[in-house]
Image 1: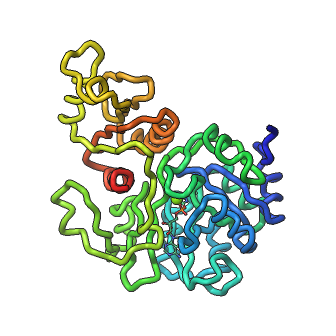
Image 2: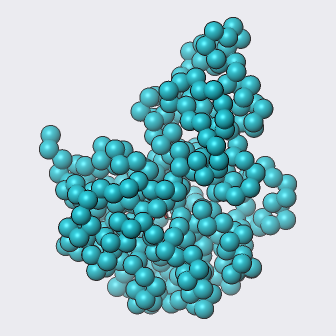
Image 3: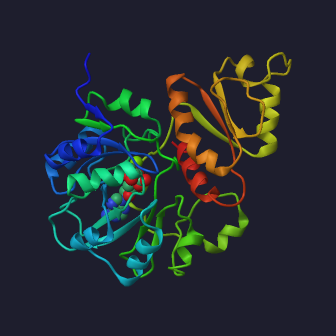
Length: 337
Ligand code: TXA
Ligand code: MG
């Protein structure tokens, strides 16, 4: 069957589709997005149908520059400083809306970001409007980070797909709510809380299950973002988190020819591994060098796990240091379905 979507590497042509009310899948530096004009509410609502997304979970609007954000949102001095420091890039701010001309019409606040992926920037500029776009995935499933996955999933569901380099980061943007007296980190991402605290020292973190006792003093309970109550990022397989020793032990016990093989042979479960510096057993296992690799590989590992009908994904706990917090957030969500 011929795909119904127009596949092209030309952001100008795809920008026209957005301008005329179409829905377009495009890469950003974090993950792929599925977007429509933020000024066309019917087009935005179509995204919810395509993704089967709960209607009370609002979309992020993607802008070309700070001036365009100012047209629709109240930008405080602090928010401006954050945007000037971290945008374009993987940071989303929840701001107060100036009026109801922009989606979502039923909220006083809106999440905004300026993506740094060159093709995404050209698409927004070409469309002439902000683009409301959640991650391009079916609701509850891992976000897509590879061209072939978005084409396979969306080529008969949307009007266009922008073909360009795949996302470099691999997990969704950091989301900070700037509408409260203390800014709240609603979703951790590549822009870390340490980066953010250099501008907003009074940032409040959500409670997060992370096995790091040093973090307890930073952690406070905060209200949930609309998106936080939904299941996210989960493959069908059971996700099991293991520390380095447990992980390497299990890899060892599952090496072919080993007589004390555990899950795979004993219980006939189909399993996969993602972790640091080990000898792979299956062609779908992912060997990582850094937490950055982990962010880049995690979702495509989960997507492959679904395609391969894996029963269990064994995931090593990320290395201490940068990006661990964001990775643990996604891993815990994938685990707790
Ligand atoms: O990296 C990303 O942010 C990707 C790319 C495509 O830009 N987009 C993305 O969108 O991850 P989505 O819809 O999957 O996640 C948006 C998150 C949700 O958790 C949503 O609840 C929250 O942002 N959000 C959106 N608008 C909000 C608002 N007005 N107040 C609070 N949270 C909001
Ligand atoms: Mg999403």
